[in-house]
Image (cartoon, rainbow, N blue to C red):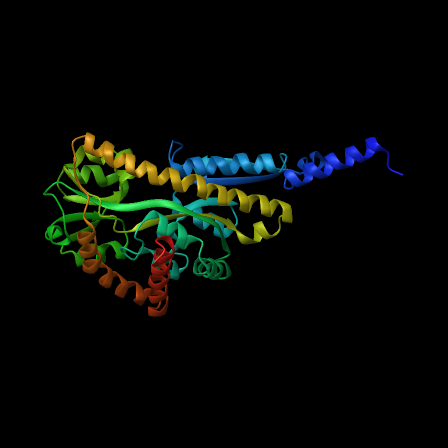
Length: 346
């Protein structure tokens, strides 16, 4: 027979298990698993950094110390090197971006299509779609890279030193720096601008010396990189949406106890929630700060934005279709449109 005191003790234990089912016992905590989680950027106030710190805090708390997350900021290489390390199993987890993953799994290039998403909210809706799960499952089978979560990197915008750019026709003749990506080269060519791939560390000197007239990047990058000091005009045309991904080595991850895997997956989702809102607000704040610094900022109308899409999307879609397949390109466009209709209840 169970006494009243014993019954209360059992009831309290059961209640605790319901409130915090993922917390692991102190005995399990002694079997510590160290997770190295790296990003190719320095520590700072950005949304992606806040999200990584949330992963560390959540994993260590929920596991009772059985999981120890060690964060590495800008010390183990850039996104390309980190992705390679995760693929090879020499690094447990990393934050990378979709443009880099296209080098490891070609279908991931489809997310570089201009004007794929009407807004951040549409992109967030799209990230949770079955199509994205199919894409990442396919990449996992082909490369051994498992995707735990997507989050916002931000929309890219155009800056230059020659003139105010309102519509796609205003880009004609401009010399523009791009990343070392054929997608961005084709994007600029579709606008009648010349594209010059230049590495990031060389960008500001190139702008100062008029090697190029302008460049394209997220507003927060323009602000943090102090590009506003060497650019006169900015157009918030939001041509390509960048995604961040939390990735892990699938073989390493699959060997973990199931409770550890659940904690890490929950933490990755928490990262997305933290990063998405902060990145979106940070980009809005960055545009205001860039304007206050003296840059003339133009925000296109809906009609002008549609003109940008019509001028550029076809050429880039055609190029990406040669790299992957027309079927995947057509489907990602259709899925993005479906996400837009769900968000705006159309």
